[in-house]
Image (cartoon, rainbow, N blue to C red):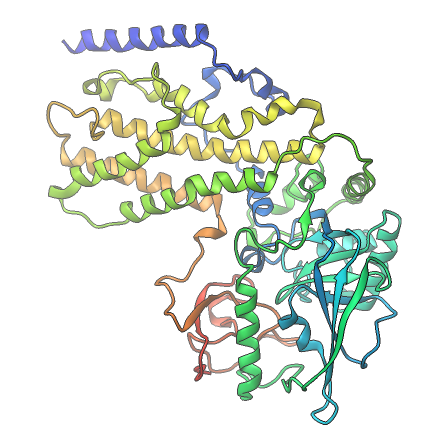
Length: 555
């Protein structure tokens, strides 16, 4: 009887392959090889084939998906992406004056939030301080550096700016902001660039000419803000200063996650990524064995620097020609929206401690969620052999499900063909590599559940043995853990347990608590502190924490 079932299973598999070759889907997959170099046949959809160790598609994906969002760019301070963009007409920008009611004649900075810029409005209690509000009158051409690119620490946050301004890193100039803005503006003048967008406590713009593309809305003489500047005592004893810091971070929290800072419109078709291994191959060996926290531009070759600058120049001077029109921000986000919460729930379920009596029902609960994920891709022909031959049949029957799932988000984009820029081809590949691994793991888990006999729609004649189910759950747990670690989406980084109503979830943010020249200060730390805890490595690897938004601040 068992041999007969084996024969039937093999026959079904062969018959399915024959049907698949005849019934070609309307959206042909053939052009995909133009971008991936992968021929589209079922042999290429091996559920056991994990990504290469030096693959970077998922890193391109997550950095592109995180652009202009404060949370992920605080978590990973060393930026790897440069993107041209535009600040639209009517956008308000803010500048805290140090010298008085005088429009800056030199190069200077503006903020997108008054809570940020007002901290730079110096003045005595007797004279008050001055705060300038500007309105953009013509579309302002800018270049955005991702990461915490205004964080002045010598550990990689300034790398991409240095490569543009000086064609190399200058660690001795990490705080030489005057020279940096001068040389960036000099470089950008050739391409009509009006400013450079960076992030510190919030997003800021380095303005190359205050008399161009903007007009004054107001220049107000305000009450002195009366906060301490420089490095106060840590923690600061001035409650007003602490209140200002906490509320500044609260205003920033509105831009923490998607959609992020919406007042700056990025052109993804001109995106340049230092994770692009074809554009910047010299950094590939530099990342071997390093955690993502430690990735940086240091060690890049002069040839790669020249290629990056050439690619940026092409993006900035590109004539107005028909483009793909693809909304890449949404394309990337749709992948995250589809899978993030479901994978998180699966991880939660698979981390539970269970007794033998509840194993089968629990496995069915996970299997239902796996089935929900793969349901849109479960083509009718791709039904498994009879579940009773589980131990004798591989999961190769699920390859069509894997393929449909992995190519859904990119198959239609490929139809744009030559209208895609090199940056967009990189993004296609990033989405494809990312969804391929998600779909490989999820399809493999679902297929294993089918074969083990825990799928509620295909109940076995008798329940699988507890040892088999426990083995399955262990394999699922390992699969999900490895996938979530590989994807490393910042949407999963949150305060656990969630913060109370009077608290906010916070990642240690420069410059609060960061030393200027000395090693981390030794002080008393507690859970509510704004300052990173050196004992937990938060200087380089910031971890979320709940901080109080109301006095007393527990400093």
